[in-house]
Image 1 (cartoon, rainbow, N blue to C red):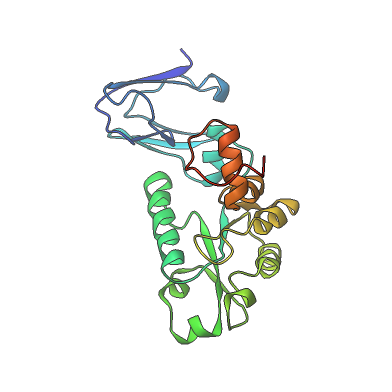
Image 2: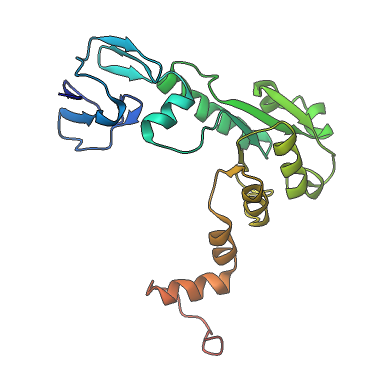
Length: 228
């Protein structure tokens, strides 16, 4: 058989060959079809290497070694190995902590994903924690956020110059500006967040209410009788 039939205790969220187990949480049996990858049946205590995958099997824990292998197993199209965080402070800290934890659990390497951060003179003077955590920091102008973390053109320029494959804007600053994902997508850079079309439609209270009503979603009464 060209596949895996694994039967051993599984916890919800256990990673199987880099997949997050999303099947029946009450079942101890998982069938993974690896026909497309061309592998023979292997048991849970074995290990193998190939030019396509480097997967270890040890006490029920399996890992893919790199983001590239992860994307290949999932049949994805884009490998993300470097992310620009277009934010500062606790938002940037939480992003790096979360992804590094995930990266360590999945790849066995918390630095599989590299982080680039933007640093204003004010954050540098404050010796902000997120700067110390990042793999690379890029100076940006100080002052109000329209000169740095909320400036879509500056974010795009940094993303292209480094370069990075993706941008995470967190919350606040440029995170709710549909211009940012629009600019990034025009240059082949992934925006980790909603697409610009959704942001344009739902970022406006009136437009989002009309859109919800057109989809028969219950909304609070409002004086829309002259708008439709």
